[in-house]
Length: 100
Image (cartoon, rainbow, N blue to C red):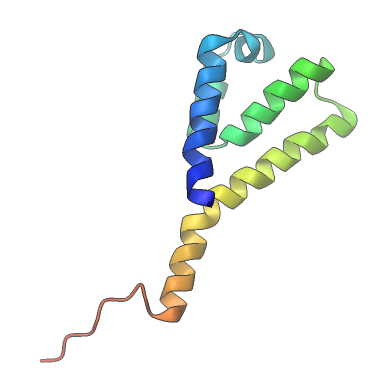
């Protein structure tokens, strides 16, 4: 299930960025921070934008929401590595040995 979250969050951030002024308003017109967010931490940037829009700023306990976005991104981005490690431990990820 984690594999579907990564493209959905990236698409959601792109749609939010291109169709509303929320991202530009939150980052004061900077384009490179949201672009890095699309590439590396989309759930974190979406969470930051929503918290900044709804609360007016990100301070105090509002940072817990952003930390939650970071944890979602870390979980989604580490899924391929965890899956590969699990496959290697079970022997499914290894090619059969060829003996001469």
